[in-house]
Image 1 (cartoon, rainbow, N blue to C red):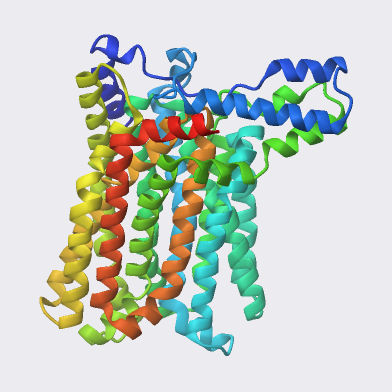
Image 2: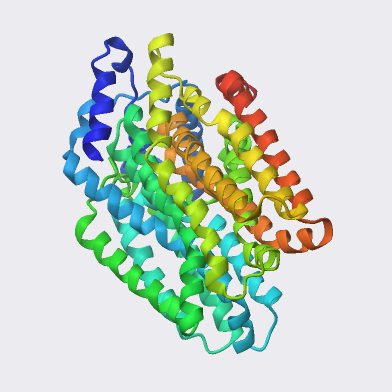
Amino acid sequence: MAAMIKNEADGVSGGGSTTSTSPGTIAAPVNQQDIEKYRCGEKDEISDDLEAGRKEEEEEHHHWTTTPSGQDDVPDSVYDRFSNQRKLVIVVLLSFCSFLAPISSTTVLSATPEVAAEFHTTGSVVDVTNALYMLFMGISPIVWGPFSEVWGRKTITCVTAFLFFACSIGTALAPNLAAFFIFRILTAFEGTAFLLVGSACLQDIYRPTERATAMGWFLSGTLIGPAIGPFVGGIIVTFTSWRVIFWVQTALSGVAALGAFFLLPETIHHKKYDDLRGLSRKKKAAVLGSMVNPWKVLKLMFTYPNLLLAGIATASLVWNMYSLLTPIRYVLNPRFHLTSPMQSGLFYLAPGAGYLTGTFMGGRYADHIVRKYTRLSQARIPEDRMRSALPFLGVAIPACVLVYGWAVEKDVGGIALVVVTLFLQGVAQLFCFPSLNTYCLDVMQGRGSDVIAGNYFMRYLFACMGTAVVLPAIERVGVGWFSTISAAFLVVSALGTWATIIWGQGLWEEEQQQQ
């Protein structure tokens, strides 16, 4: 896999001048002048420190948002710090880690009746935990993203892996519904860090022209996890207790924690915490507080239209994925007269197989499109990467959603049609996510982790809403009309993606001028 990524990148680097301008990837520079002023005692009041930090952030923000390709002065050799074999180990480890939180979001779906029975409640109440799980998966990135920029990728990955391990034990041992809620929420809060920091690690070690291929492999874990989770959960609850689901999760997270500690190197180019050395404790606390402020992530997302539209695009995909996966047991069991969790769990293998198949093609196709348009325009424009997602986001996935929904609603086509549409939709999503994720990393390379954190916040916010409303909506309007709503959301997000491709650079430059 690493050799494949490297060979494709070499094809570009041999293409002449177009890649000499390919931007490197490095953490946003810290204004050393302000830090020296702190060290020399030229600013004694904390209010002056905060004002200086604000101006520094605005100047830095201006640099990264007015450079179309996010270029910086990092030498190309920074991407050669690790061998292809070491990069392969990093990608495999990060993909495994990214598998944990998403699979945990769906394994319990097959066990909902059993969990509800043990805690003397209803399935609807247990489903609330899944919605809260998604909500805290969305909140988590705006915390861990800035933390990883300050203290490094390895540190945050190890810390969150250990906490995920501990919270998984708590869930498995939960004595009552309240404890189950609390530990599920805490597990979600730690788990999304793997997705965020993993994306940032790939930004650190891969050139922009080879990044989407690696991203495709990495994202396979995040997408296959939710698809096979209910099947695994169905097998477990068919033969044993639902608590075994979380003991298996505990074992997997223990492996991830050990792997992160022993196998994951520090990939970040520059830790922002290193720039605080020499400051007084009071001044260091003020500057550090500004660095890890979650509000700056949200402000970035909602200030620049191109980032907001990219967020809506990924949100529509995740909304569709979770609103499709969540009700399968409730929708398909009566439709096909299935009687056990394991039988309905088999349907989840279809999108899972689609995600796995798309892994081999989606990222490579995105990098191919980037190289094609780089040759045509003699410059690498981040928005060109989104072209690879457009036909799948606007046509292929909505078509699959409509066929699936109305086939189930009208009782036509049988099991074969449902399985085929679920599979094709899974393949198509892997043609969308790598390009959209990599766009977030490319467009403002100095603040890539902040951008991707905001994007994850938006996508899992919509995953939360999709999980919460899908069953009541299907009961009210039917699976056909609900699928039509999801398809319309996808088409609208595709139009936003098209607008970003055409006007994305101008959108953020206009916003910067207004500021």
